[in-house]
Length: 307
Length: 307
Image 1: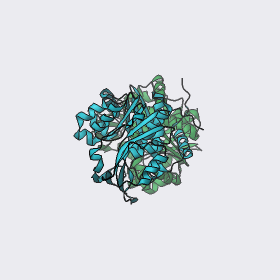
Image 2 (image 1 turned 135 degrees about the vertical axis):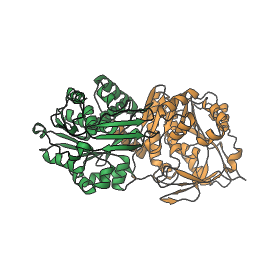
Image 3 (image 1 turned 60 degrees about the horizontal axis):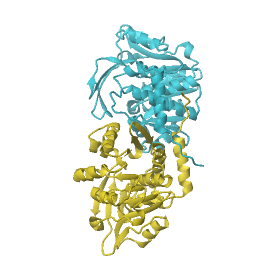
Image 4 (image 1 turned 120 degrees about the vertical axis):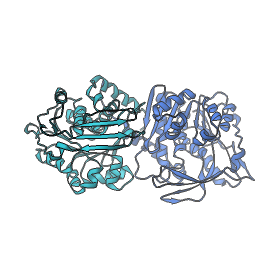
């Protein structure tokens, strides 16, 4: 078992989909990453910040999942980061209705000393300089994973390139990979991104699955075909959390084991979209996850005997 | 080895892509299906029609691939079916510039008596009543496969439903499956289509792969991630031809073997898009196909040990 450091937002989300809408519920990249990673045998810490309005029962829940929240700072006189969004009918695109940074505006992540020697670091979507400051606090992690999005490409390109040059694994969605590299082919896009630093490039294609690139090798994990997607919020972070959690729990960072990690990430993401917010991931049993891995096997494994 | 009957167009295509354009070249659904199926050990016949303008060397080439062309009628004073199209920059959509039915307008397919006992019938995209007339000429095929498209849904719905009720396997693209069933989820769409008749539903998602449905089981084959798609023309028919050819050559129509067939179809389609028209499939060696199957294995196979 390796230690895992998770950095990202812990937040309130208000979500509207064609199926319904929520008031402020638990959200945030680090929340989804942490809950997903906690499915594995890990020693993981969440580095983040919330305001005094953040319910104590959410903190207890994260702690009960085995996550170290000593570096989840509570700014008593501040307000928690809030995002509101509305999905369109196809569930593939969404409009942001509100973004209130609140306590996140002054977030200075501090990695607890007990976690400075963690082998795996998962940097959720944040300002690249905040991500960079976490890397600088670590001793010698074996795997630094980064998630980012188009906002940082548009506004903080140079800083983003700086942090990308220091990471081993990047998770990015297909449109963002294309925007970042000006390449339509995801194969060519991944090759360009590998030249920026990461050894492994993971391109998330939503309902069309995820691609893992390493040198000239490619692995593909489908998304589980579903009767309905109820709420896609957090699916990408849940995917990344599964990846990070599985890697930390196995301590094996080979391409072969990365394949397994991608499958676990896809399986966890397939649960995430079944209910609003993090509800399904919070209430997920090991048996259910195991059963879904079997489904991924029968979905993808075949037996052609060739020489 | 089982016999295979292939019905569909043999045609001239003129293609324009962002990479270049062709004059009239060899095209047509039955051409791609036949060439793709000929990669396997089969006894296959093409049932189609061309005009007197159809080059004799194309006929020889098909014959040299081991395809029986005795039911590929040549109407000496007629002209061959012609289609011209132009792909947009993303290569996922295209505009039809010309469709000249010519000899296809009066096409009455006649299955040669030696092939009436074939186990596998592949009905390429054609008027549903033409497809139906082929089924009626067969003795007792074990697998009838059908490809269709939105044009027939828009214009000949009742006839299409008649032929669909008689087939075992349907190949259809994702947008067409949605149009046919009014379901956005491909899982729900496939369930509705199975109720129309087919035991197996294959939904083609282009660059996003293909899904195979049977009862409650699902198998997924990705498309090979490519640096460039040169010309998508014929990829869907090449896929279907691989499916039909593999099934006929093995004589095994189980779900497990359908998985292998889907992988072969995907592998063959991945070659098709590398060059204009059928050029790459015509010049494809068994070694190249074998190597690509290995690529599909490393692309999709993983080794998670769970109980």
